[in-house]
Length: 486
Image 1 (cartoon, rainbow, N blue to C red):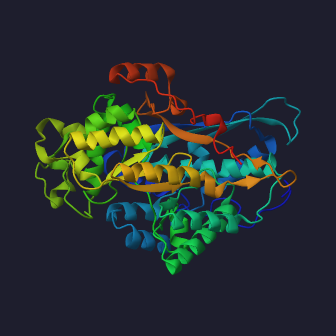
Image 2 (image 1 turned 180 degrees about the vertical axis):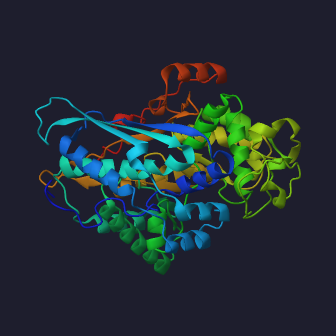
Image 3 (image 1 turned 90 degrees about the vertical axis):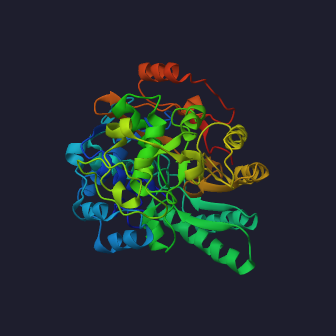
């Protein structure tokens, strides 16, 4: 495919549901608890040697403008109501009139390495996203997807779509035949929309093949809500680091941020749904300290899907499902909270591993559950730079430790290409957009692999000291060289 070629339509983003489910679930909770919080986001290219061209920047500006015209349709809202019943009526009503305003919410800048004025000039692209948290949270996934697409339209053009559907089909079959529970997680770093569509076709075929052959593995769905709707499958996901990062920044209380984030989540959605907790925002050891705590009664939202509305001015201390709708944010009401008999570790279905050494993580979490006397088979979701080899390895380790393993496989599905002329790997961009500030305070992340740490350096050092954070490195955790193997 050459730079001048037009990929199969649609070229850019045409649906606000073309995003990961956890952006919608977080937006729902933000509407309830944090509708007035102002945030900024920043962009990082972890593969800085892979530069975009000026032509890509011009194309991105055009795509930004188009985002202002995209709305959630009545058909899409009906899908959300039916397939995502944990999204409450207040949020679905909010989506009826929701729109992005890129002209006022996004600053995008291109800095050429050597400026000749040509569209072929290479350089760096920077984004700053700013506005109310509830209004800007949906930018991350489409901007990352568009940036990846721009790079492969203008910089690395030595590739084509040949065998993409078949490749996804074969990968899906191998995972299913080996008994893996997995979902497609590839929205953020996909090559483009058409590639994503081909991958979903291939995986859907594999799932049908698996059913015919009686394979034990299951394709549980996709993180992308648009493709879940298009392929009539489950939208999969819970929460992102952003939730923990922002709450910590808002309160400037890093010692209690993990517990507050867990508490808000139960306060919005209740127990029994969206129950996979993300562990590594400030290091898994600090998270586990919070995970063992008892849940305050006024945020025990009951079991099952609980319909909630944005918080009222009144604080209720009862723990029944009806009272949760008017519970004030835990930040404002912690002093009168009564502990329940259940801990977060008992209430949540399981945990997600997204950085660091998975074998060490499995051991650490197993020891934690055993020490806390938590019985029942919990789930561990793996989501960090997976391929088939790693899925099978982690599956064995997790099952031996008594867990139900599940896998969110992303870039390996949606950006696995070779160069057309040489057959060598066409390496994906490793790009991220992270929340940078909330209500004027810096937001930081301390993962289980220091290559994934993000945020203001001084704040990072301060939080490390507060939490007694220990640096961890992992030999496979080189963020500048992910997915590079053939």
